[in-house]
Image 1 (tube, rainbow, N blue to C red):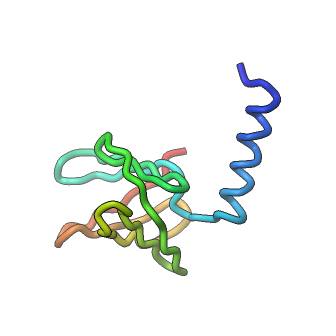
Image 2: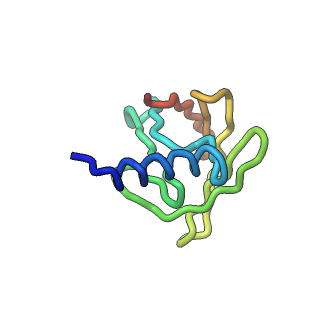
Image 3: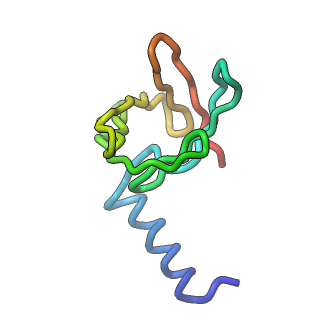
Length: 101
């Protein structure tokens, strides 16, 4: 059961994520890879992939978002195709992800 405080916190976080901390990657994405279906979850300060949650920072540009692993100082670019489609390239393999709603 959600109390009034939890509903307020959830609403405020949702508003902040859409305005002050706007990041087009936030949410859950799925893509087909050679290893099967991959799901990636982007949160305000972390991402979860292959069951591992990693602290990250985002460099948001007009057509792409660079996701930097803050502990390893490694990054990956996600190209914004539209609001529900992104792609990334690891080596020579390009993966397209669709937003999970």
